Image (cartoon, rainbow, N blue to C red; front, side, top):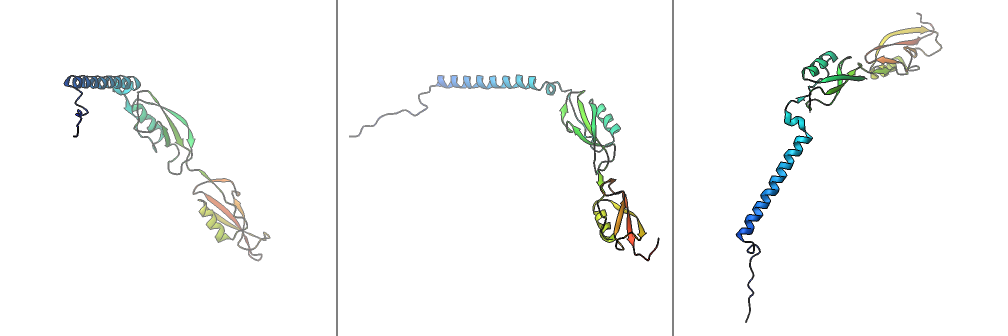
Amino acid sequence: MRMRRHTEPAFASITAGRWRRFARDLGLVALTFGVGYAVSSYYLTPGAAAGDDHAIPRVFGQPLAQSRAALAGAGFRSRVEGERPSPTVPRGGVVWQDPPPDLVLPPNSIVRLVVSAGPAAVSVPDVIGLSLPYAERVVEAAGIRVGRVDTVRGAGAEAGVVIATRPAPGNGRARGGAVDLVVSSAAGAGL
């Protein structure tokens, strides 16, 4: 004959009184966690609870005076940290701000600004010894336009070859600025 052993289900040993104590303890743990979270968030971010903070306005691309007025109107102080060349922002416009826009900070916080110095200077390429059409393409590829083309007779070079540039190769020129080329002419041609 087989004997069966009587076993209780796993949760049957927990009586109604134990369930109530378990629920009470779980509620106390949740309440303690909630109060701790509220207190720590109040002390770690006191400005958010006070509600007097403002978002930093976006001032990229604006002139410096207008940027400073916008920041002062929002309750912030501004400090210029220097200049940086920018191909897109005109000279005197803001190219960088720290902290970034839309960040919420307390009033009277400092926002650092970097102002555009205009487009960066482009180095005049060395086109001496190149034919005029090829030299023009090289100069234009560097972001500079060809200005005047002067011809000099008897320069000791082959006709149609660049023998000098004004300004000299390696000097800086504003992007889009002009470079004059001096080209040799044939021995019989004159200027």
